[in-house]
Amino acid sequence: MRQLAYDVIVRPVVTEKSSRLMEQGKYTFEVLPAANKIEIRKAVESIFKVKVLKVSTIKVRSKPKRMGVHVGRSRSWKKAIVSLAPGERIEFFEGATV
Image (cartoon, rainbow, N blue to C red; front, side, top):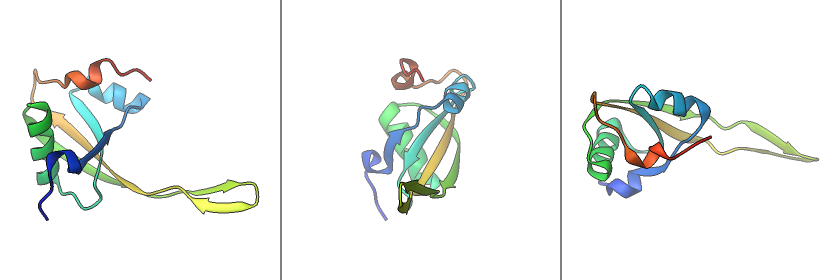
């Protein structure tokens, strides 16, 4: 499946944990569930012009949710943690605060 770089990366994930990982040169993104590590690496390198060393992916499963008598589930999604080469950084994340 051939994807465009901007289609593979859905959004950046900015949480307290991902902010701590940024100090180690690791950045977190929500990606397409069908995207593989090679596609994610190429997308991050082309969008942000950085050198990617490693990509780790995690499937975040849905959780049961309730609102009064109505029962449902949150959505499931795929998360990618991208490790950059030493000295590389993504400027887009630097202004993000939690």
